[in-house]
Image (cartoon, rainbow, N blue to C red; front, side, top):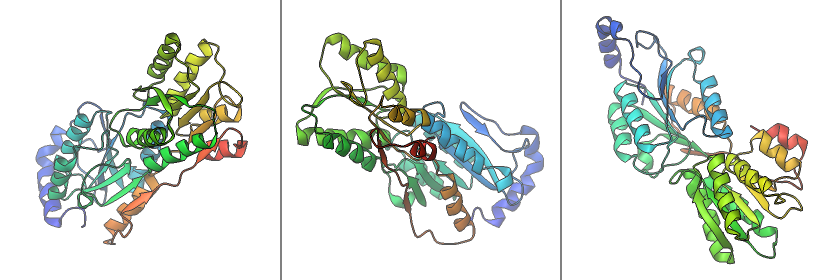
Length: 334
């Protein structure tokens, strides 16, 4: 389906004179790239991009920067951005973008559920939805394409690596991300299944909401309780960093030949350098660079082409401290 009918565009043009003085109004965390009069230049593709807080993690910062570099006026886009870690706030932003008449709604959902109603509204309004970064629990007919990481596969790769370490016992501190997010669901699910199958002991399983300080507090509480542990499975690099801070404070060794195995996700450059130095043991890749794939899909739709590959899974891998190289850090670090 093309962006908007020519009739709608002509009606919009007639209304511009009356609306120009009002400008565009932004609410909360919405950052608009539209012109001052709120009108879209002829030929510009209007997109509303809903993402998680770019300060959430190094991964999210890289993801946001990638999107902002692609969806520019120079590339033919009139782009507006909205950020939140809360599903209800994201849904409110989506409703506003739909009312504003965006051609495409790009969505990285804070939670996997609760999106059916607003996506149906988008469909009724002629707004085409493209998912990026994260999957949602919604019928595939409600979005045109999905460019995502396979969070389940990320978790499975990590826990299989941990199993292959052949530890005498597994006493695991499991630090989770924001509950209900696709990353948390996939990475937690893999650990839950493997722990049950292998009889691993989960010492504690708590969310730190991607936050280093909260992760440090979780680990510190386990140390203070005197509970033995030898693995920290943190669902992103920032939380792994916070966990390590608690270990360092308590003079507990970690990493290669240390007392505690450290596992993270996202492959921030600084995290891969921790692996290279032997201070961490494992880091799982989560590829943040999805903007070029989204642009390609939009251009196909604009040209009336059919989208034959509805779901694109980003290629990702895991890194082991004993085999990682400087080239890996330079190539895969974000």
